[in-house]
Length: 159
Image 1 (cartoon, rainbow, N blue to C red):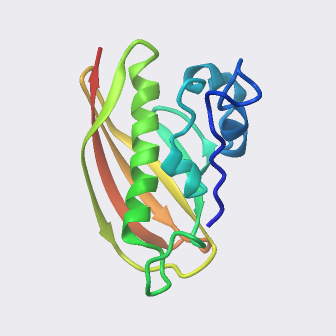
Image 2 (tube, one colour):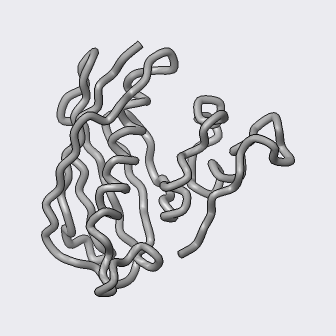
């Protein structure tokens, strides 16, 4: 597994302690201030998640299968959920805004087929963007566009 996590506080660039991590994860520079104190999270960075598109209504990221497999050599079911939760929670956080916090309160997934190599893509689409709750459907596909899993995540928004 590629460990692209770059330690935050105490790094050479104290003005932006997670700058390199955010760049490696494909986070647009316009969002660096929002994530400057936390980065994308150690687990998401270690799993190699790279954002392609970031918005409250739609968020897309990729993740390699390599390094994220279960003992049978296929992508671990928990890896699907990590990608889904990362996408849904980031999208909910964008919807919440800078003075509010999104907290995952429910996630579920159905696995349709396996992947043993390559890169998977997760696409989160908002089902509901409310004042106190958000719900996103997240579809994971392989490089051929075949659906691997479908997840649903609900986040609580609080002040």
